Structures are given as C-alpha cells and as structure tokens.
Length: 406
Image 1 (cartoon, rainbow, N blue to C red):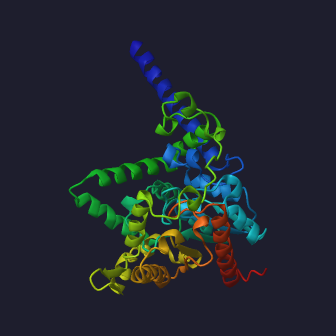
Image 2 (cartoon, helix red, strand yellow):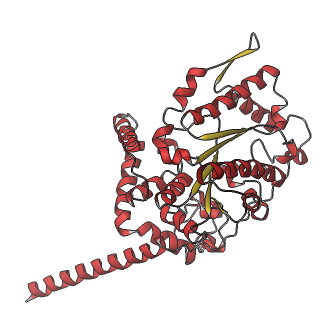
Image 3 (cartoon, rainbow, N blue to C red):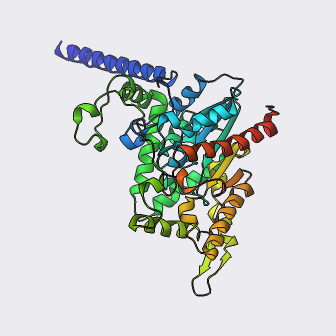
C-alpha cells in the first residue's frame, strides 16, 4: 500500500510539474506575441543588455508589427551608440526628426544599442520582418571597417534566439560560417568562448520550445525584475522594480566646444590619437616621408566575412552610413593624415558596396564641432543634420525598390 501511495505521489508530482511547465510556457508565448513596451522610442539603458535586460527577437518583431501598418515601409535603425542617440534626450532624438522627414509612408524604429554593431540585434529584427513579407529598409552606422567575429559581438544572443525560433531567412552560407566558427573555437586553447557558445545554443534551443526568456523579459518589464545590476549602485529596491518604471533619461548633450576651450587638452589628445589611428586602418602612413598609400588588399580581407552575416535579400535593403568623427579633431590632422583618413573611409564604403550594400561616407561637410558632444556622438543639432542625410538616402532606396513616390 505504501508503495502504491508513493507511486501515486510521484505521478501527481510529475503531472504538477508538467502542468506548471506548460503554464509558464504558454505565458511566455503570450508575451512573445504581444508588445508590452509603452511609448517605445529606443532601448535605453534600463531596457538593454547593459542593465541585464535582454529584449528577445520576438519583442523586436512585435514592437514593429503592433506599431505599423502593412502599407508602411519599415525603417529599422541599427548600429552603435551613434545611431542609438547617446547625447540626445528622448525629446530631441534624431530618429524622431527622421520620422518627420520621411512622413507617414514610413515608420522608423530605433533598435541601435550602445556598444552595438550592425551585424547583431537590429539586423535580426530587420531580417525577421523581411521573412514575414514586410517592406523593410535596414539603415545603420558603421566604422570604416567590418567586425566579422561573432565572439566579439556583445548582443549576439538575439541571433540564436531568432535562429531557433525559425524567424530568420534560410541561408546555408551563414549556417556553414557559424559551424566553422564553432569548430575553430573548439580547437582553441582558450575554451571560454566555445563553452559560452554551446551554453547559449542549448539555452535558446530549449527556449524555442518553452519561451522562458520571453516570460522573464515580460515580467521584468511589467511586474518586477529579478536580477541586480551594478547600474543601481547598491540600491537593491530600485533594481527589483519593473523596468517600465524607468524613463529614457539619457542626458541632453552639451556641445564639445561648450565643455572645453578650442584647445587640445589631455582627454582630447587621446581622442586625437584615436582619430589618427582610425585613419590608418586601410592606409599606411610613412612618418619619415610624411606620405601615405592605400592598403587595397586589406579591404578584401577585412570585409570577407560580411556575406555570412547578410543574406543576399538583406544586402539589397541595407544602407551603411560611415560618419566621420568631430571636425574638432579632423581639422587638427596634417594634410597627409587627412588624406589617409579620407582613404580609409572611402575604402570602407567600397568594402560594403562590393558586397551589394548601399553605402555613404558622412564626412565633415555641413557639420561643425558644436554638433558633437564628444569625438563621435551628436548633440541635437548634429542629430538633425544626420537625419537629413539618412532621409535622402532612404527615400531614394524606397523609390528604387518599390517605386515609392513623394
């Protein structure tokens, strides 16, 4: 009798466990199919991986689907903190100006992240929407060179989330690229990247069935959060608040020249060296002869992995913008350094265009040092100029692809 009761107890426990598993999985699927972000503008600090909040691929797709119509041309903005709008408050964010310039035929979504790259988070969103048959344009800022190592991408989790949920285009070239990358990591003396990759793949494969991450993210935004972040400086109570309670409070930037005199101080001396270094990526500068020459062969090498990240259909709808750094620094370069800098940016543009991605160098023309809050980030005035450049290129692409007319 005791054995029978024991078996019934185990059976009841198993049924209860399976019932609970099914319940939380269904709740996760609910959050995956409904956008819970209020008045979305961008993934600010407290809605980003920097604060241990991880928006899922489903979140990205639903934000767009629930805030646009099938007739509108979707514009996904990706890239780094430049496109994210660091230095611009939510009220003066450059993508709001871009929306106004494009008009109601377009709908702009800023999915760029601080420290982000055009090959991860935002690219996943654009591709998932493209697979659903939506009219999409993917526009991003980029350095004049290409980051083609998946292990160095900070927000690559979104790719595996979308991959195992079958949200991406079928693309064998990419599958083989990742398989080769995994084999190289497995043969490396440092096993940490390999172990991290395997753990991530297993986690998201399970998650594609159970949707636990969507559940956790939904609860974390709407009800309460469960993980402490050092961004809260020891304030445990605040760290547990639902993330919907945190406003987009990125400080309104002050122009660089308002913060300092028009002289190179210690901080800007370091920045100047970075600018010179950036200008030497595709260019060899001879300090003795003060001459430079382009390193043409490095372009092919640097951009060789781009096709693995961008399926052909994605390349057709993508636009890469390669912005110069602040004129405050550019004007301090020697003539040969300027030449080297210009060569680097033009060759970065050529690298994208070789693979079929429309590209534009955003040089210093029309910008002043007052448009920048630091070496690379725009304040409000610079953001408005940036939006004008994007709007022109996006309208042209829409005309070419769908025959859109103003």
